[in-house]
Length: 70
Image (cartoon, rainbow, N blue to C red; front, side):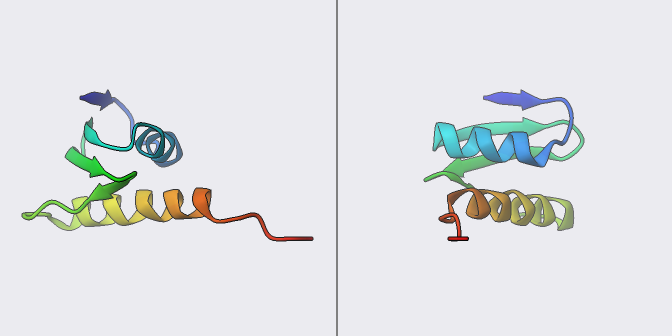
């Protein structure tokens, strides 16, 4: 389990994408589970959990998107 003392969405997204599955804890936001390279929405998620999961998964999606041709 990785513990993040500050909420840094880009750093967390890189970590989740790299390690693919496991658990993490973000100070002030709570515990999260991730699988297949994305955060999984907890069953009893409150608004803060939902926003955090959506934001980090959105960043992961942007990292995985192919670069556009110029």
